[in-house]
Image (tube, rainbow, N blue to C red; front, side):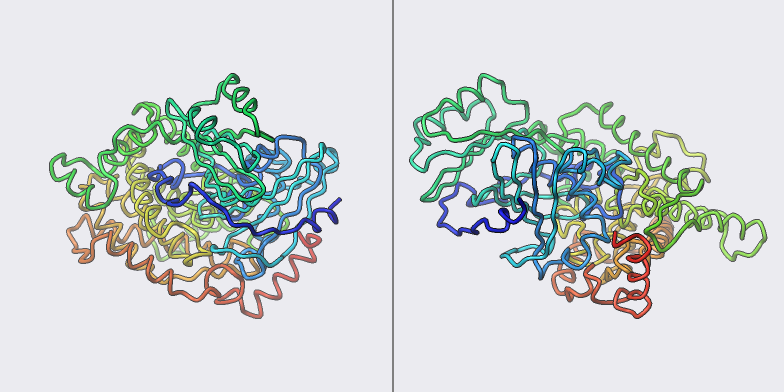
Length: 548
């Protein structure tokens, strides 16, 4: 029963851990893992997609059918005031119930929970955290097993598991994982360590009650290995988890560059376009062939353009502020009412269509986040349609955008809860500016200059979604980001001076993010989210959809 879960003691023990330098466990960002994606339904990548991934990993580690779950958010964290409105419940329920994030059943998973006789409870609690997007899961299985897991959402759907059953751990869903709980006196050096061969990584932690053992590698663990591990004296339980992210880590080839300055030095000799540099980077980072990464990118492009078509056709979902508006652009254009030209109109139309697909719970690609998903795809499609661009050139433009996103992932990341909308639509504008420049035949230096100028225009942008829905002013910020990208690309291609190089601008954004008041970072407590109208709309929507 849930009451029993609530009675679980929160024991704090002295832990000796091999995770002394967690940054050494981190892999270089992948365009497909960290920047473009996930493919998802839901209003928010940091809330919905990351929660789905966290729930999916937790169920794997529970290693038995779920009976009950308690999901807790820290009262001082960013999720406490809006976890229902921004889709955290939707994503977490889907992950715990085994519903794929693109499955329409995830929108209302109640019938699935009822059919499986699973009780999931949410509450705001108080517990130590070091990230605004922290969640604690306590799961009980039908066989009496229990899992307590603490994880954080890092933005753009990325997550990290920080603790399992009181032991420090680092998991991001990009490896095959094998974990075991053992007696505190288990022989690590004599029995456990010899298993870590042929690319298998071993980490462990222990306290006075137990030892926690964590193996990971880039390929599935053979049954023989698992059985050998289970048979070691002192092992109490063993569970496995498969990768959740699209790119498995540990298979990468030597990277041509791992920082902005290394990119500049590398390309001084190579003189490649930014799109080709991005393609080369991801080919090496993923360990896949060039044809395979191109195929993956074209699949994402097809999904993005399908979300534009879906939005223009009209979407329907009750719990939203803005219903279909994308069709109004063409109507006003046909009536000669608009001051802008055809290209600008198509950018606004396309971006709006993607955002309407997102708010209608249709399938979208977070690029780089769900809150900023309209800018890149909407802008690129408008320009490629106007120029009758080849598929190859369009694909390379997306790789150019992805590479800019890699530098964001290396720096401040994409979490609006951690640093405002400059990390979402600001990043999207920078990525789109580079993509458009690459698309028009610009050099890598010009594409980087365009990315810098677009980002300079968004420093300090707050995140203040009205009524806790990722719609207002999110739509306007996406549209502004698209037009910003168009202007920055135009200036760069014309030879304008960006003055401040992109790496310094990204570092400035990171610094500004760290100094922004938390009330301006997607908490519903500041900016437009704190207006009287926002409060009224939130109450109206809660009444309309029964508190959903």
